Length: 124
Image (cartoon, rainbow, N blue to C red; front, side):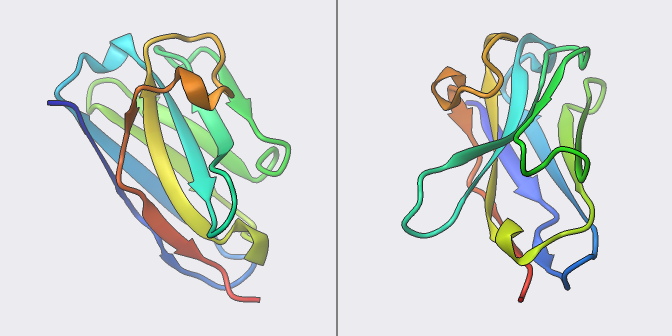
């Protein structure tokens, strides 16, 4: 079965960097676009960044532009999210997800498979 496993979360101070990774198995990795989403208690899950099947197209939420970078390695079946200049408002559980389509990277409803999430905490 399809598995997406996130890693790399943790507690970091404001201004620091963190790199999240997601390892995929049980699917042909280059056949799916990948995305990162995040969620805080009481709020809806929100889009952070997305990348097309072969990495030619990326998309970012306004809050992530200029600070976060999404990348993928189709030889290792992994997608990463480099997060720089972290802020307290970046505190959330971060999820990676897989979509069968390159279009609609920002659309949560396009994503069929989800990981369990990894916690990122940036104290204020």
